[in-house]
Length: 139
Image (cartoon, rainbow, N blue to C red; front, side, top):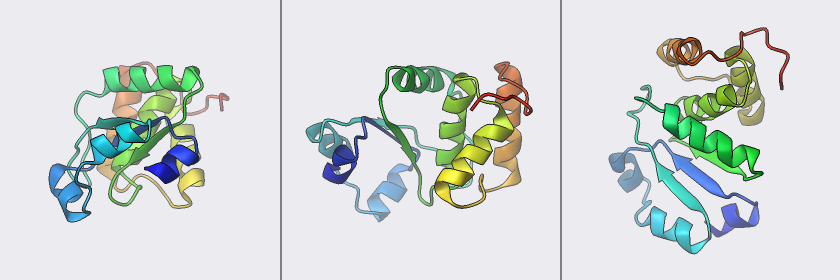
């Protein structure tokens, strides 16, 4: 957490399940984050799965971004679940769904998301929440 704080991270959003946290030895992560001055949000999503209703979370995270805060999302491999949470935030900031996936893939250095069900979920979320079209020229 100290390294994240030194990198300027203000908010850490974890999609890890409790079992994954245990497997990775991430016991007391919320307390460690608080001690480092990082807001920690746990949004457990089963591996290779999709989130439930994350509209309020996306609104909250996009508000953090607009306020100049550095938000990081994580999951086990940083390809699927964390991508969806990052893309939801980008969608609510006005970025189209395809462009949001491109931006996360560029940042991650890997193709995202993890599977087609996650891509379909993101597109449905974008339609349901009137996100810009895939051809949006926004960043």
